[in-house]
Image (tube, rainbow, N blue to C red; front, side, top):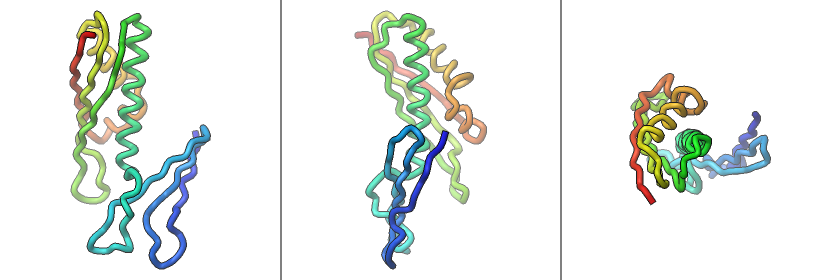
Length: 149
């Protein structure tokens, strides 16, 4: 897996903190920093997600992917899955994630709550590389809501 990240504000005295990421799979996305009122020259322009937001989003995508795949492989009639991630970060550098809560919302037909619990547990214990990696430093908790359709 490869990715190239390039600073987009490298020209001029008013350079900002935007970055372009180009992935090995041929996709591109922007990142930006938050504006810094105290030192505007060090801040971003708030034009794209922060890098740590993307780390959190990638973790959510990784685990939601797993949950859907596990439920589908179990021949469950899953119709929807989303996960809302809430996090806390350390107050001093490095401002790592210290706590992450993942609240899943699953919709489907005839799915038992035990099947959903199992899918979430399997993702976090075995399959989701991102959450397993972050779990080495942060306390990760999960919950879910199920809606029968």
